[in-house]
Image (cartoon, rainbow, N blue to C red; front, top):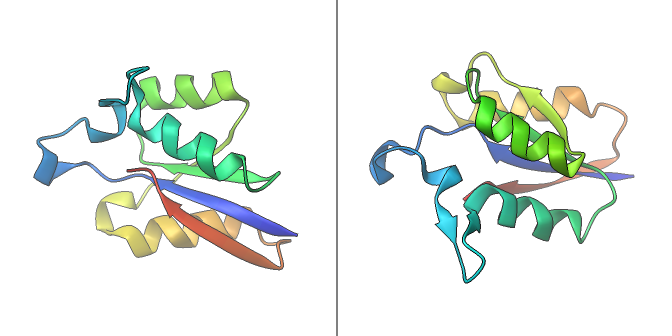
Length: 101
C-alpha cells in the first residue's frame, strides 16, 4: 500500500503567512484543501502533516475525514515534517509526497 503524505506544516513566511488557508480557484477553497483533494483522488490513504497551533486547518481536514499528524518540530524544516508523516504510516510500502501549497 502506498500512503499519500500532504506536507502542510509550513508557516508560509515568504507569502506573508496564511498561505495554506488562502482562497484558491473559482470556488475560493483553501489552498491546502485543494491539494488534499487532488492527492486523495489518487490514493485511498492520505495523511496530512500539520504544525502545532493550526486549529482552522485541523478543522478543515477533520471535516474531510483526513488523517492528520501534528509535527512538533515542523518549525525546524520540511525534513522533520516528512519524518513525522513517514513515522505515522510505517506500514506503507512507499509514499507519494505532496506539498500543501
